[in-house]
Image (cartoon, rainbow, N blue to C red):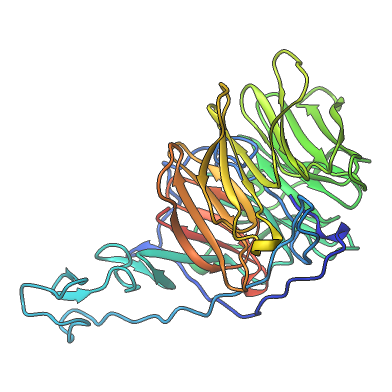
Length: 439
């Protein structure tokens, strides 16, 4: 997670615009997918996003907590498909459509762009259909959305609020978003710049940089009322990224100066014992966990700490990492790139937990904002220059050619996946939460 408030570099300004997106659902609004996992996992574990970065100014690119370029893509031009019996949208001779078109019940359509047949005949996308995928704005006009996590029924995220005030919030909405009838719920208000967020099967966990707290609230609160959040730790030194496993919740204290950071943990259900796992860290931010080890990134390295035998922390790689994720086999991270190349020489890397050489999964990736993984692919967001160059990208875990899912984005520090879609936080539309389907 990056923290531009402690940076000294100028703001990289983008073009402010609105990008009105709506749902993609087959025919009628779809209910939440019951096949989705119980708790999509952040970068802290498989399918969880843990690259939690602030986005209101851009710091020195040499700081691991790089901020986010505000860039907005122009609104997609949508074409409405005529009713059956109307003139077809593309040439149709009664049996064969022109090249690039598909016969959908007697109408020739372009499934790559037609919002009534987005990716397949009859798959309705009320918003923007691009490259056969449907973009959905789940919530707009959010106050600095940062971290994000997805469960089988809801999307949760942190709104950082103003830099010097305790007006941040933790929010939730159903998977279809407000345009699908979902009600935007505020689960916690008055938070001091909340950034990282994680979830297990029962609870949400988040950090607040102002006040230095690690908080918890029940998942069941989404869509309704909730009791007061529980403070798991306080007096922490600028806590940022957060992750959770079956035993403990973990977080990174970025610290006020380089070398003053620490990695911390608290056992779940032990009455509040907080442990220091590593000190003297160079502003650690993003953090991830798998069943056997903890991982984090700081200004110039990726570090791992075994969880079972209490072994010492060890370097996985050096460079300029900015986001991290892990699963049971590998750890994955983004490298920002160099200023001499406008950061367009950034990379996505993985390292096997069993050892061996590093594997480069992608090159030419600018300032990776967030990264996550599912059983098949690695997903990440980029913040490219010039403005409007941000993307959402995936590549198979085993390697291959990366696929750009969405362009023209203004990603912030959160990304998550479920069985069908990719979700991320954005500067578009005054601060928004967005998804693309299919993933």
